[in-house]
Length: 356
Image 1 (cartoon, helix red, strand yellow):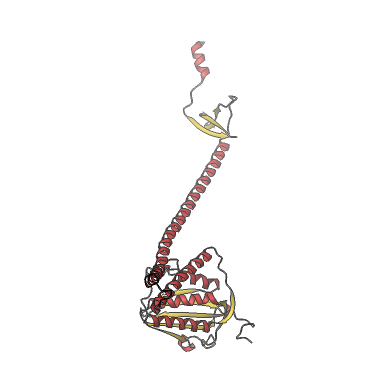
Image 2 (cartoon, helix red, strand yellow):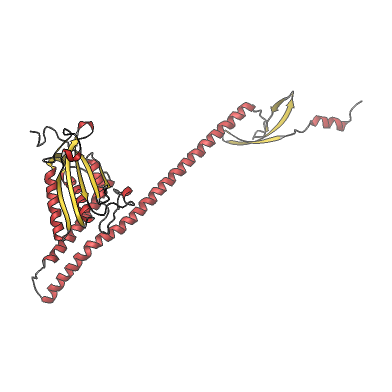
């Protein structure tokens, strides 16, 4: 029996696929929209892809090749996402650092303004008083009281010290701090510093006692051959910079010890690799180091006093480390006061003064 024309046409069109997958492929910078019908032949799935491009040609894409291409694309996409996340995290860290620097700059400006005003105001007030006496008395000379003169000198020194600290911090930040090393007797520097601070204590009618202790081996509880008494101890270092560190430590100890004792000691001992090193400590019986200050002790602008920039210990740390030494501070075990210690390589050789 012959089939009708309509039936033959219907058979010629074939059956519609049960499922259609749509892919978006980018090949050689061209985007293709690919329709993928699934046909069942002999129990196997054949994926024939019919696509339209500018030439309206159809291509058959091997399933394994397509899967590999998609896997490669996924890997590239994952790598891109990972890189973007890393870049975002890096930008967050940079932004955090910039924000921290900005906050520190604002803090520095506030501290600097206060520190500049503190010595400048007494100087201006004293000079205005002197100018007033010249104008009203119509004199070419006036008598200047000693206390007025000392006030001018004290605040001028304070202003000069602050300017020096700012310059030192700038050099440290720029990594341009330079040392001028020479061999010198550390004990002579210590005795000069102690004499200057004792005179300052007397001027202020202070009740702080400043002593220089000579450490002995038995007191240190170390072997006899490891240490020697602090007599003449020569070091190869920048004399002015080490003197600056000693002054900073003594000034802080006296400032926070209104009544009591400040002791300074120095000893030479064998360090690592059997090299001699000098250990200098400044111990006081003052208020000690606050728990909130201790973790940030040698950072910039950290201070427990209303007077001071909080730069002294930061500068001291960098000076000591530039010499190859270390510095640390801690509260005393008995709960009274604190002790600051720093070490220096002695740097002695056959050309040093104590090695003829």
